View 1: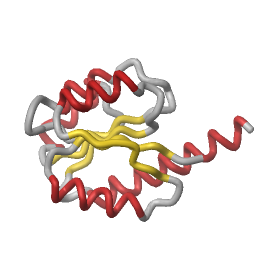
View 2 (view 1 turned 45 degrees about the vertical axis):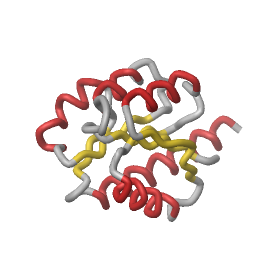
View 3 (view 1 turned 90 degrees about the vertical axis):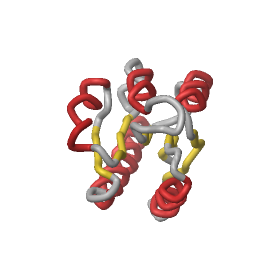
View 4 (view 1 turned 180 degrees about the vertical axis):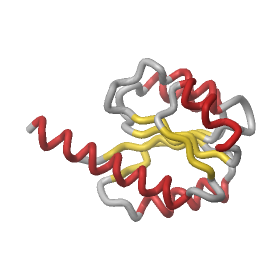
Amino acid sequence: MTTHVYLVEDNLVIRHGLLAAMEDIANMAVVGMAQTQFEALEWLHKHPTQWDLLVVDLFLVEGSGMEVVKACALRRPTQRVVVLTNYAEVASSRAMLGGADAVFDKTTQLDEFLAYVERCVVDGEARSADAA
């Protein structure tokens, strides 16, 4: 089973770096990207079940990633929301209260973030095998 990832990140360099890193993870596909709160909310509204993992930066060029996190409060139990930000220490508790499953710092916890993404893929494969 492929894990479908939706990425909300406005920094082009970081976005390309994340895409390159996530391409190395087997059975994972990025199904879309947004740079603004509006773009993300519009896509998520139109595709509520077409993602398994949502990766969100909190500070966007337009709008707030926190509003994107909050908008996913009524997601399926198998869908995960991860915040990837430069301000993890300050924003972690707020993001978790807003509905995030995990929060990682872009500059110091990228390896932990990628390990979490890999676990999400493995968990998705396990759920798929159990359902078969």
